[in-house]
Length: 186
Figure 1 (cartoon, rainbow, N blue to C red):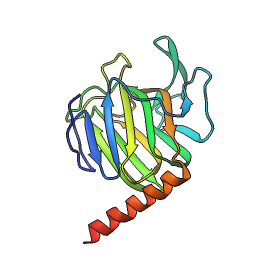
Figure 2 (cartoon, rainbow, N blue to C red):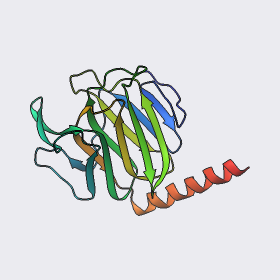
Figure 3 (cartoon, one colour):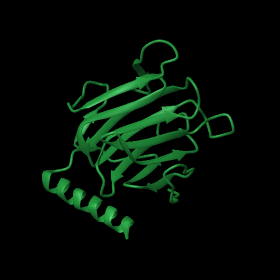
């Protein structure tokens, strides 16, 4: 997999390190302890919303041999508590990035403040074998937004998984965040 360092605003590579998180886009991702797969497995603690619907309501649609959540617009993943890792199978039909759209954006938030993000040049190869994996680098997050790079693009997501940090891990993440703040002030 090719890697590149990304700024908070723009990254057009297969992997990026943004403030607070490492974001990888490729053909595989780990499955974490909490899972929603739209085939009957659904752990509590997550609300998924498709916003900016062009027409119709989001719904469950076939994707290969499985089911997926399908609709138009930005996908919001809101978690009941902070998480430290997240993966999802993602596909939209916006195509490669160009002057009139394409690609997709990832934004991470914690308590309403953006803590990370990246932009990717392509939202998939059309087969659905594309995965997004996010791991916190000292700053937990409680919301993930995936935005296709065009208007009214069809979006499909499946196999969502995430980890909630253990209480001891939360303390270490908090200390890591304080260390980053102190380092920035110096």
